Length: 195
Image 1 (cartoon, helix red, strand yellow):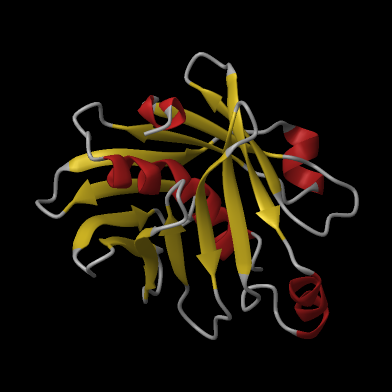
Image 2 (cartoon, rainbow, N blue to C red):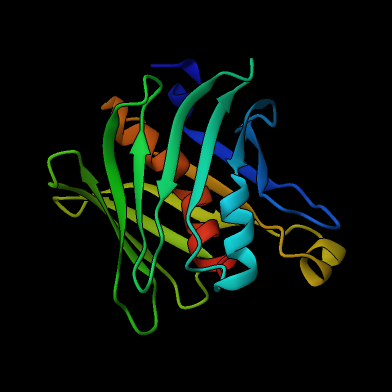
């Protein structure tokens, strides 16, 4: 496992751009040191689909990069009509699981499943879709995602968001840590960028 995923706190800060064709995030640890990035890879066909379809339907690919710029995990969503399903891949490009959006009227909800389709965690958001609790199959909290204040100008005039992801130190499974560390970017792409 790359040392990137050994951190228990990740601050994921979306970059602001006047005209953006793809999303990019800087990733910091709990001490404020930059430890990597999350970069959207957007083929030309996806850019064309942005002009034809609702952004919430367009496929996306996010690469998680360590401080050296090496791709250590990847998230991919195909064309979506209603509920999103985001596949998670490890450093070698092997599928390790996926996020699945669940139907919910007021509070967003997702499940994290392993590659065998077994549920390993549930993600439940508040009514604003700003703060999320991540619990394991036994109902124990194993992580949180909290939206952070980004400053008046950034909040009012951009769609850029900032999140803090916390993973309980007791979570030792590599694939679960990868999924939790990447959940904020997936949620941002599904719930915020898709609007």
